[in-house]
Amino acid sequence: MISTPGAPQVDAARLAAALVRPGGVWTQVTALATTGSTNADLAAAARAGAESGTVLVSSHQSAGRGRFTRVWEAPPGTSLAISVLLRPPPAVAARRWLWLPLVAGLAVADGLRASTGVAAELKWPNDVLADGRKLCGILAERVDSVHGPAAVIGMGVNTTLSADQLPVPTATSVVLAGGTADDAALAEAVLVALGGWYTRWLAAEDLRGEYAARCTSVGRRVRVQLSPDDVVEGLATGVDADGCLLVSVAGGERAFAAGDVVHLR
Image (cartoon, rainbow, N blue to C red; front, side, top):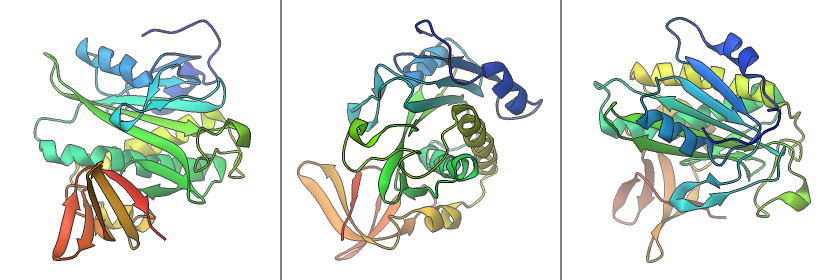
């Protein structure tokens, strides 16, 4: 893992003491003051054979990434990056991996509510919102290697960004949303929640109702952009068994596994 000197805002030993248990989801925790990309670091670790349950936390990313190769950056000390490496058993069908960013979204929303007091909600597929503004983005990636497939899931939370530091007007931060920003408490709360949701997902529980109840995309008109020339509008009605967004359009209902979603007024 590539890092630069400095003291991380999260104590890895204390976080590991709270999370790592025999038979549990989490197996080891590393915390860095800064790195290029926590997801890139864990992808490299996955190719080198790192075990399932590996966690990497950083208070700053100099080359953070979002979906569709978008850049995700924030000034040092204003955000929290959490990436996890998970290796679902071979018995888990590949199509069910589409649920992983949704499961992570549930965990981040729970963790934010528990540790910051912010009433976080979800926007399909991978955004966490507060008052309709983006508070956290999630990037889930599959890494294949000789050690078998792995899922690397990154969660980037805006913690103490001020209004003039926001990358776009539609973003927000924990402090701007009226919450208390404590990186250590937030990391622990998110990972505890993610461990629970991931365990339920592994057990093939039906999470559609719980996800839909927290997702602000469901029940409203949306625009789904698949490409610059392929845009669909309709009423989002829920998610299907594979985590795809269901949208009622002229001629019936369509299921979307990916795409940029805009909430329409």
